[in-house]
Length: 252
Image 1 (cartoon, one colour):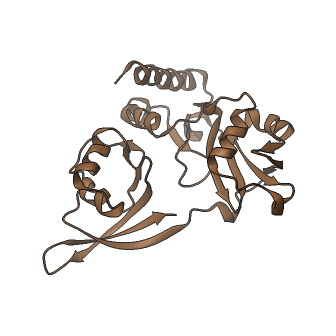
Image 2: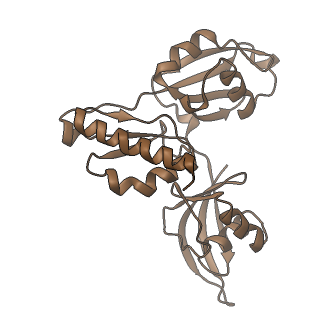
Image 3: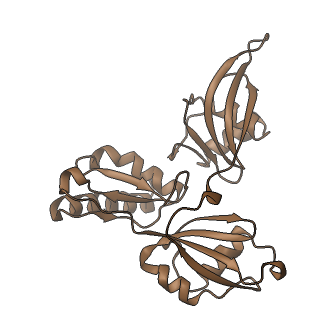
């Protein structure tokens, strides 16, 4: 681990100990996939207090970690995460808005990235998970994204339209190896797939992978930075040339 990772590790251990000694839930800010991998590397060390990971809904890449449990404390506490819905006031005249546009406009309010979770763009509208402590501030102060005037509302429930959208595929690989599967799914050379893994750009169920030959299990979520994300569903038999069919659900 480098110095930044060690600092995060120490912060995780500190929050766990505070939750246990003070008998109250403690939360991290939003952690990216690399930071979550640091948490998973020490998760066993903090299991005594109980932990839970959430970004606000299923499939989020940026998540908070909660330390504590209702069994231990005798009460429960939800994650301090608020979902905001950002919509153009006059949609037919709005600019085409991207993830980067929404993120840049919110960061432009002087907010730290650690207070912001995933941003989901649907039909030129943005949904953004944020720390509850800054939700009202964004609602009151965000008036424009790019050159488009917008309004911001708090979502009381998770709307169905932000549920993940999948494309089911069956692909043929030489074997159930992480590098082989990544190369086939994203149409990369095997060498480039190996380089993605060695550079720390590949995560399996939140954990950073360095093992090229890692075998995937049903339900594993594979994220390749800059390429996308898919769920490994199952192996599906072999071809006449002893190649392996695998079934995946690709996030689109």
